[in-house]
Amino acid sequence: MRIELNGQNIETQVRTLADLLIEQGFESPCVATALNGDFIARPLRSETRLNDGVKVEVLSPMQGG
Amino acid sequence: MFYDVDLTSRLMLGTAQYPSPKILLEAIEASGAEVITASLRREGVAGGAFRDLLANSRCRLLPNTAGCHTVREAVTTARMAREVFGTSWIKLEVIGHADTLQPDPFGLVEAAHVLCSEGFDVFPYTTEDLIVGEKLLEAGCKVLMPWGAPIGSGQGLRNLAGLRTMRAHFSGVPLVVDAGIGAPSQAAQAMELGFDGVLLNTAVAKAVDPVGMARAFGRAIQAGREGFEAGLMPERDMASASTPVFGMAELA
Image 1 (cartoon, each protein chain N blue to C red):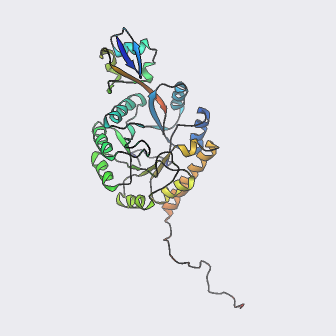
Image 2: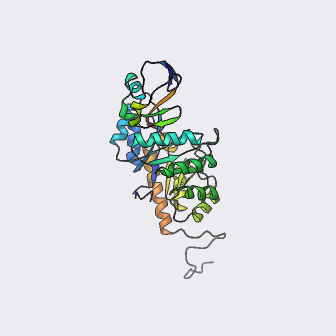
Image 3: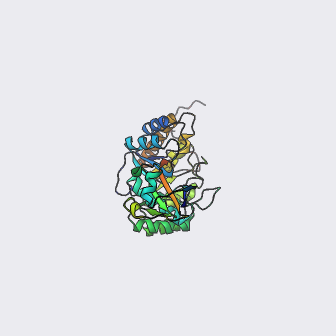
């Protein structure tokens, strides 16, 4: 299935958001996730299923003003 | 002072645009700031180093929703920030215009309603408009953060009379001048008006010597506050000799 991860189109076989983080090498405790513009809390990642075409954002603490 | 948190320093310092993480850390130390701001972004090159810096910092974190133009973006960003930063503090920005980075007051109030009802401690980046301020307080905000000037412009307090009116209107409400400050004297001026704090970033990060400038801002803000607390003399239109006339010699 094809999904959009942080603005990039990628091909993946994983079923859930939690598995996507593992597949893509994110350090799970250090990131926050959103699916199609909605916040997905950490405990819900393993039950959040990915469908073709979804937009996933994985964000980290960065510098800001 | 801010959501039942008392601070010694009244400077809140932004963490963006510094020449290096080391200089950022030194600038935070030199400024004496106890609150630093941060954002949520797609992981960049220096992400790990910045996380280490945050982890080792003694400062309280104030995550922002910088760059959000809609209520939905800002609310989602705030929810993500609460989880990843582990704080309910959020600097709420809903930007209305790309050039001026002026807040969108309508979106801001709407987003503040949502976030306050979810238990966030919202620090709204707003204008000096009194009615918008009232609506933000009604929404549940316990701090207001009016701009001094457009973000990153370094113009200082562009609407001095408006800020003075705001201070008088919202007596008892913590007010922080956020954005547009370019020089320590401008920060001192905000404090002399009776504002409770100043939030700034670019003026320190883009100084020739950010660490020196951070120290200068820390001192200016402290001096301005002490000046306010000591009570400024009233302004006069005419001169009034300070040296007594009594006892003056006749030499003419």
